[in-house]
Amino acid sequence: MATVPPTTIGVVGAGTMGRGIVQLFVQAGHTVYCHDAQPGAATKAIEHVDGMLARAVEKGRMAAADHERARHRLKACSRLADLADCELVIEAIVEDLAVKRALFRELEGLLGEQAMLASNTSSLTVAEIASACQRPERVAGLHFFNPVPLMKVAEVIAAVRTAPAVVRRLSELTEGAGHRAVVAADQPGFLINHAGRGLYTEGLRIVEERVATPAEVDDVLREALGFRMGPFELLDLTGLDVSSRVMASIYEQFQQEPRFRPSSLVPPRVAAGLFGRKSGEGWYRYVDGQPQRPPARPLPPLPEALAVWVDPAASGADGLRGLVVAAGARLVDGPGNADLCLVMPWGEDATGAALRLGLDATRCAAVDPLPPLALRRTLMLTAVTSPAARDAAHALLAKDGTAVTLINDSPGFIAQRVMATIVNIAANIAQRGIASVADLEDAVRLGLGYPQGPLGWGDRLGAARLLEVLRAQLAATGDPRYRPSAWLQRRVALGLPLTTPEAER
Ligand SMILES: NC(=O)c1ccc[n+]([C@@H]2O[C@H](COP(=O)([O-])OP(=O)(O)OC[C@H]3O[C@@H](n4cnc5c(N)ncnc54)[C@H](O)[C@@H]3O)[C@@H](O)[C@H]2O)c1
Image (cartoon, rainbow, N blue to C red):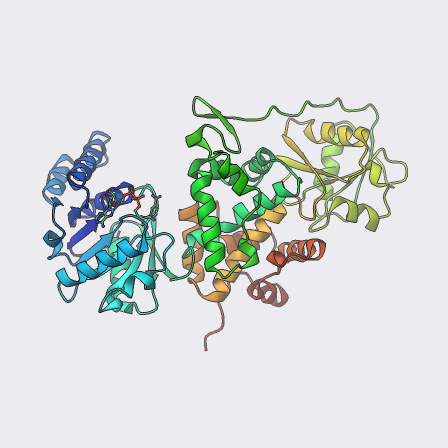
């Protein structure tokens, strides 16, 4: 943790975020003044923070003496004017542009010449808030995530007129408090909410196309790719009423960029009150707070003496052949005399692979080559795969106890499509210079909890393959949301890692 000289920080808005911000900075050794328009709210927030620090002492994470000292650095202020001495004021009030602008105007009149003003806004443009001030150069965004003490990242938003010294100072203060400060441009969703779009938009698109159900999408992304939660679990946690507004707002703020086009599945569900956990039903139904998962598909028996052909050109053919033999089925050299033909395409649907290889589509199924075979396996059917071939493939893939998800035909399965979308959006963020590559990678890991930064992850999975998936989706659907970013295309063409920045000029 960098050492930063203690300073006096004001926090306006003593709700969920304000409390967390107060706790973070008082723990880092600063004096924190808290004000809220609601009488008594600031005092309540200080009591709450004091209670959190007492818990940290109980758990041995803070010395009792440090708690005592921190207590003396906390102050609830009933008047905004009491914040006049603060070197920095962080605003965490209601998300309303007019109210925020009025507050910033008033604060500017109260604070000293050198003081900085920061907004924790999630969805407004910082420049719109800053333009209410005489000196917008001292206004920036400082965007924390909930719960603030645990989410170890904050975005420092450099609005068009923000002075570089203000960005530096806010970054130092944030890093000094033990959070990673990432610098992002004043663009819709800033960095983290922008980078997080792909998981939702592509998850919803897959469900819209009836390739898979929400629970199937979540299972594959959690178990085969390592996401902490799938998109539908996350939407249920946040509340679809809230998330649907974020989806619509980012789409509109990006001038209806097709990559962020919201799904038509969402508004009827919001109208019906299917918000998620808080309303007891969303994509899942909740009983005693627990999501009710659909029962697993019954496992069919493995047919006797099953003859299986595996496309020898497939990237994971050896692993799949080993699995066939271990399950007790018989490998055959040609597709002609096989009961079941297995293909492992990248960016191609099972139908396309069957036709390209001259296979009988009724005996054909596809296995996703992206996730390691030891993890949940995805089995994709053509429109005509026979029930016998389907059941044989399911039994074969599940024989060693590994979970299997059956899906309908789609170029890119679930995992390839979602990863290609996430990597494409990240590549476009890098292309637009919304953040540095290093900040983008850390922000996504810390802010979204992904196992890896998106560009490094894309490299590990194979950027050229993900590009193929996007091209195949674009060709199959004609939907411009799948157009590959120039950053991705050029790095693949040059054989460079996706994390390669632009040349110095
Ligand atoms: N909740 C989140 O997960 C989250 C995450 C990141 C950013 N944000 C942003 O942080 C801000 C605060 O969100 P929150 O969830 O803490 O809201 P909240 O409703 O929990 O708290 C807002 C507080 O601001 C007070 N307030 C309203 N107008 C005021 C004014 N003019 N002057 C002083 N106090 C005023 C309210 O009395 C309330 O106590 C919003 O801009 C929100 O978009 C929220």
